Image (cartoon, rainbow, N blue to C red):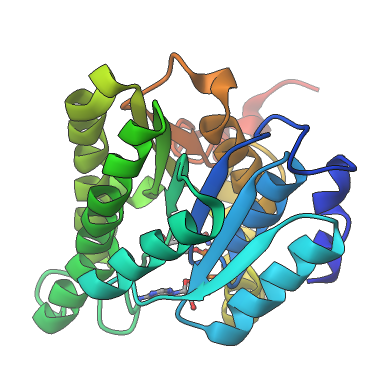
Length: 281
Ligand SMILES: NC(=O)c1ccc[n+]([C@@H]2O[C@H](COP(=O)([O-])OP(=O)(O)OC[C@H]3O[C@@H](n4cnc5c(N)ncnc54)[C@H](O)[C@@H]3O)[C@@H](O)[C@H]2O)c1
């Protein structure tokens, strides 16, 4: 949390200045990692934020970070797999701030111990993956869109993953549900573009969230690094900054797109790391 303490201090008066001045943003999964970074950075750019998470303490801590930097944040406890809970989250945002302009449908993921290859994957986990990644995205957008239309437009940002783009030896469900998130993003963009509601997705590559850092062995972290074109892995803020851009009017001509923020992982030929040694000098 220490590294985020100054991130919200980009402007002195967060509600009247900044790239997101006047906007109300809901970020799900804002109790830790990328969602927390996005909420703090959005507040630093003038947004009033709702930090939504089913981890009540995490949401409160994020709200405290925002407040300490002079911003406004409302912590809300939500289970994004539950329709009523998502509806209540959107109501809370509009009740507190009077409008809704930005929704980050950030919660997602699967249980890596159960989400294995085709023959060994747990099909119940596949169902949970659909709930956590797909249904949650649909519920969030369904409840947010009418408010965005009322506000004259809005921006929905869905968190996909590079797993939507490539095949892998495990996490069969994860790739499938993130591909569904990309597809839903395009449908929403087409359906509500005429009312100036934009919808884009971000595909993060390997991002060192606190949870990932704790759980991944050093050799796996090193092999992830070797897979990137850049010599480092992502930080939560790297995705947060991209979310700020998609939330802001700077991206007003951008909709239905997948922004891949992966350090060059998916565009790099698998032969490239080995072939570097063939270069002269
Ligand atoms: N970290 C990465 O390398 C990476 C890469 C690609 C995509 N992603 C995507 O980023 C998102 C996860 O973000 P993160 O990496 O910051 O993870 P994280 O584990 O740090 O944060 C996830 C947050 O979501 C909350 N959450 C989980 N289930 C919830 C639910 N049902 N309702 C409400 N809140 C819930 C958790 O309490 C937690 O605070 C997922 O969509 C994941 O697929 C992450």
